[in-house]
Amino acid sequence: MTQLKILVGTTTQNATLLAQAIALDCADLLGAIEILPMDGLDIHVFDPVSATPTLYLICSATTGSGDVPDNAQALYNSLGCEPLYLGHVRYGVMALGDSSYPQTFCFGGKNFDERLQDLGARRIGDLWCHDASSGNAPETTGAAWCRQWLTQEALPALSASCATV
Image 1 (cartoon, one colour):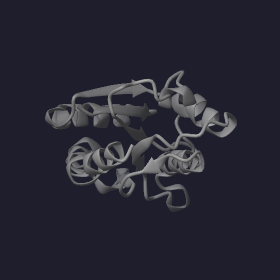
Image 2: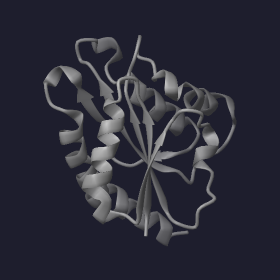
Image 3: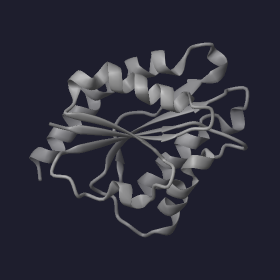
């Protein structure tokens, strides 16, 4: 059964709360859900060492001038420095931001998406963007989005790619 690894880049813990809500809400859909804070991670978190099909979910806040959070810097930088082909990686992105900063809205997640695609990884579905100005808690709307993403897009796509291998 498929596992989901949620890679969390956060400053204020909103992305962590979102990941925890997803783990609770979607546990019945997957064999395992692992929440991994990005602290100290590098590109090798995507190494294909597991016999279990794995989906990745980037759950990243945006900070500063559209930057990834401090705890995500090492992983983000390693995606730009280490020439590893990630064609085996299937992932989704949940980006948190504030639309009152339109030039950099949700760039933490968008930046990860760009780097992963540059290395051959394939995003499944659209990016999910949460607007802090909306007044909605990211864990409420995000968990519902993730459940729909998993059932309607990610799990069917992963099953199809595993069947063709």
